[in-house]
Amino acid sequence: MPEGSVKILLIEDNLAEARLLQEFLKEAQFRQFSLVHVKRLRDALQEIAQARAMSIPYDVILLDLTLPDSHGLASLGPLIKQAPSLPIVVLTNTNDDELAIEAVRQGAQDYLVKRQVKGKMLVRSLRYAIERKQAAVALRQENQALESQVQEQTAELVRAKEVNQRKAEFVSMLSHDFRNPLNTILLCSGLLQDKEEQLPKEKKLVHLRLIRSAIKNMAQLLDEVSLISKADSGKLLCQPTRLDLKRFCHQLVEELQISSKNKHQLVFTTQGELKEALWDE
Image 1 (cartoon, rainbow, N blue to C red):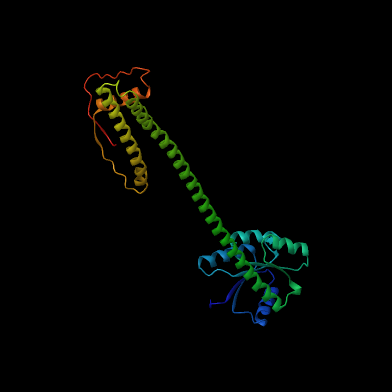
Image 2: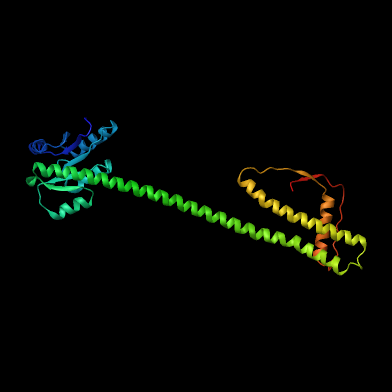
């Protein structure tokens, strides 16, 4: 079909009226058009499907409401379901305002009374029906695009909220983990300051070692902060090293002993040979 032409599907069981409508279009010098005439709703549905399959869909439908296999507005539903983007102009012999309003409400673009139809009126109705339907389809597509954007932004907000929640939990955990080595440093340094003369050299060395261990733990906590950043960027590396379990457990006991302010005596013993272990600091 030539570019810019309009393809019209006329559903009309009266052959004389179908010819008259075609003459109206010719007399009004309507832009190039191609009109296909069918007499039944069933044939119209088949024609729409075939045209769509051949990638030459119709531009507009002229629908008579009195057909051999369908009557009244019952014809609108199947047509709209088959081709929801195709504008429909209803033709009828009845000048009924309520019927006209109901036809438009159900999806028709216009309503024409046959005995009142003239060439220019028919052309204007077809042109406006096509333009209104195109505008409605474009608006629906824009709304769908906006809804999709809103859903994407909502999902991003949910993800951002989850990230912020995890960050808050991490800060809370980090604050708690920092408090433990800080308490060790405060207790050990306080004992070294208050009981410098009473403490034997061995005890002083123990407290100093615990202070160094606490500082090392705090440094490791800071490293873990950067570790999370590396994990997010995919640069996280696992670097396992050998761990002296006996020495590690002794250090834990000493820290706990200091934290208890010597109110309890903690004893650590081992049985059998401790196997070598690996850990990632």
